[in-house]
Length: 417
Image (tube, rainbow, N blue to C red):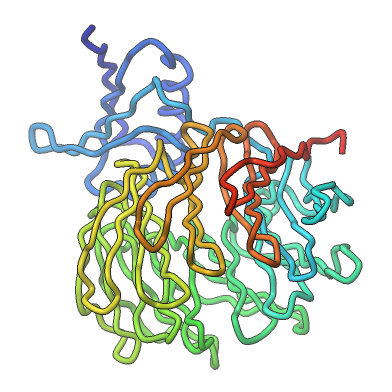
């Protein structure tokens, strides 16, 4: 049966109203086999990336000289989901995860039992653990601040204001501080538990997920709206310049030797290769549709990027900077992670409530495991044998025995805990 088409024009609406109009259309038309054709401005990075990250099946095409955003209403987007999403593991065996009602849960990795919950700010979105494990940084999107948790007591020791809607804190690899971008403000806040006031840096338009080189020397801030990367000197905490990359850059990954950085460009479906010594783009690697989250293995042999709209991982050789293969995964690979020994790739297929295990040496899928609904971020037990996956819409944490390739627990982390 042919699909119905629902036409709307969003070009004269501000971003927030564009989002609201598409969400209303999705809610009203879901399950009716209808496709929304929305006329938008050219290169609508903010709207397109927000829809992708919410799990919508969406694409951009040119029709009659105009850009049209095509939204499928039969998908399984993360609309209204507020449960477990971001997760990190402490070296001592504690696992921290966001959950509902503005709090975190603390899980014991060995027993897989919830120890306690920690109240934080409004709508905690993402977590980052300091290099020494002493502090956990919690970005609170709705209260526009960061809660700093003292992990010795599992209590909030400071709350520091940031720009609007902070989402993705990045902990420095060589000191106890975190860099926190604000997309609406075009700023990065440097949060340090020992300093009375945070530093605020101006970066490009719609900054997304900042990353810091493993040697701690440089921070790269991809700016989805200006299609640039801002270079930040971490010694002076100043932005020293910008590089043009592909369209809609969102996330960055560095090689372990801090020689190269890889920037995933979500609108141009490719990866920019940056030479760190010169802060210059030296190559481009083709990827799949909506290339978004890159990763480099611990040995510095292979690079990967999750292609949100083509449901695969693109793999390249670090030595040659050439694409090797694309691995089919599942619907909407929101995030993925490598085991500490580089043997296994663990992929969260958010759109189909599954996790895929991939042999990282042969780049071959081995097992597809059913987990909770909308699996998101991944953390590993200290010995690397167990993967913990936060499943947002069912608000559980899936514990996976990676070597035996099976789910060993689904831990509820709801309000009753």
